[in-house]
Length: 374
Figure (cartoon, helix red, strand yellow):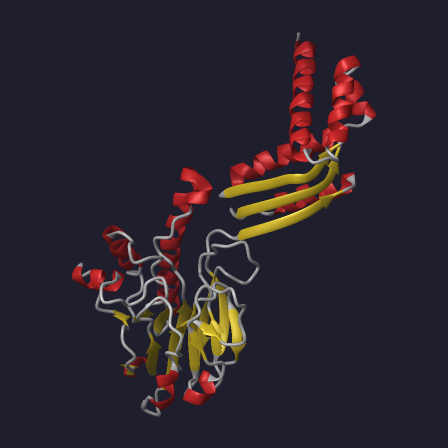
């Protein structure tokens, strides 16, 4: 009963410059450590092979060191690895793959399929039909040859490709490389392992995108997983299990704060998120000074826990209550300034007014605390 793991879009060597020097390198390193976890899982589960459906590397220009580190990360699984190039690492005349071969970095158990030829894995009970990309973009279906490829009847027919199932996926996907939606039926495939779509997606019972195993976008599309596939014998329907493998989930939250209870629920939700994540938060509504202070305390603690935390307060207004202003002793001219900044939050300079109000009330609070301390 053949069993294999299906993964894709590792994009080793990808950089995360937008996250700065503290977080970007960690996120890049996580892609390599995820490969180590895939190798460990494959070994522990005793699968027959691991299929990597393209975009193993993020670019042709990754360093020699990165190439060597990738194949070293795969050493935890001694069975066959099946790889094809995708649009990011296409099999050009001179490519990351030719460089890897010159470096003698590719182990004997790693099959990098650079040509449309059947790979027989008789011991594992599978015949692999690859559709490697030999250029970044193609406008013909490279899986056409599957229909006429001959394989022994006792072996599973497993296709592996990188591109877009026509008429199924969104138009703004990573590459236009077309794949016929009925390829499985036309080629009598037992399974078609796909890459390019970064989320986990089932097209039909035998056609799946595994998605990237380490999430890299703020999309709720099932990224951060791989697929564990078992097929009893040729013609049987695959049994597919999704396996969470990623280290850092990417989460995007939007929250309206209108009542004190809204802030309570938001802080509770934030505290319940214990896995280190890449977190983007957009808040709207309004807060009083006590609520603003509680919010920043909660976010400060979250920043220490999570890999990266960004927040957008553009639509969040700060409205000190009369009690807030009285407590800060913002009387006379200061009281007038506070009130003007409150009103200015409704205009074009809302963000600037809010920031100024936060700074001013913070200074008043510090002055009051220092006075009490004396």
